[in-house]
Image (spheres, rainbow, N blue to C red):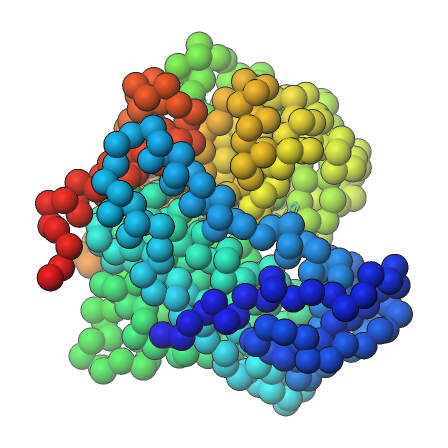
Length: 490
Ligand code: NAD
């Protein structure tokens, strides 16, 4: 495995501070500016790319200052994760040596691979797989396709996966992966070739009993089916049918599980229901707002609707909308499928980012990307509960503000664990050649996530800490027990 620290593009510095947009060139995969050019226009890689007419260079990657500033803003996702670990350490007398192990990732793989585009040219792309820990079982974690994917993010998300599987007591470790692309830039055929070539590049660094990817941001059951097929096509014929569980979140026909698609949103809603029960809070008529209307956000919104709660504002990458009379979560799903986002939804009013965050509601479900709840946005929030569907949606300062404002938080590693729990069910069904019915899946999921919720709640009371720290304590406690029982080899 290569040392991915070399790949950290966050070390890039712009050459000047001119207000003019600059595009900055660096050699693909290697930090350091090789050459720079001042070009009037907007970056074709950042959020403003729709305004840009600049062609992408064939060699090298072009980034504008805006994009680099964005990367800097999210700098330290892994640092945030480590700070949480330190906080848990201060609260409980955990074994320092075991915490040293937990603070590092086990393996970091960075692959650069060529893919032929529809116009017959070849593009070099970069993908990552980070395996944080497998003391509890095979590495497990999603794969995302996003232009902001970098090693820091994947390292942090892999670490969170280890805590998550430990909290919910399932026999998996933690991993995460991704490809540094904006899938909107590629045709379906190109995406298939990208996925297959990345899978080939990962080789036996993934496997059904070793490291099992799943869907995450901008990836879906179809992408899992391509990974499964590529993996199975590159191993010996008599191993093939014993390997269908190399990925979870597959289409049902290819060995997927019923209930997996909605599992993360379902888990979020089971947690919210348990919170409501604890607080004597009636979800019927309660209001909620959702950031991110992809898999997690839309399913959480639809399942909240079944409780009689009212969705009043939604934000995604295309914009934000509000309707205080209520937005029909199912109708919005159809609209998003057709139009690619919530912007211009005719049955609501457009609002800006600040108004979205300032919308008075009972519950906020962040289900987009990390660091959405920072100091400024947390100050705006006007809710009783934040139920974290996304991974790492709250940074350290945002968390402090939530605590000061006494907003309850169901932290990500507990709240969004429904996905990995049902992935575990899918994996088990594949191994046993079984097919479980939806009510069996839902009953088992609820049992597991609600008991994890109760463990975190009890730890928060016992150690007098916030829920995020409590969740970390529950995870570390389990990991420490296993390390102590087994010892450190040799
Ligand atoms: P997705 O790709 O299906 O949806 C992502 C959503 O976020 C989209 O609606 C997109 O428009 C929105 N978004 C992206 N950038 C945004 C921005 N800057 N502002 C507002 N909205 C923005 O992804 P998903 O699978 O639903 O994952 C969402 C989050 O949930 C991620 O943090 C992911 O890691 C986490 N998660 C997903 C799963 C799963 O099973 N899919 C499991 C656990 C955690």
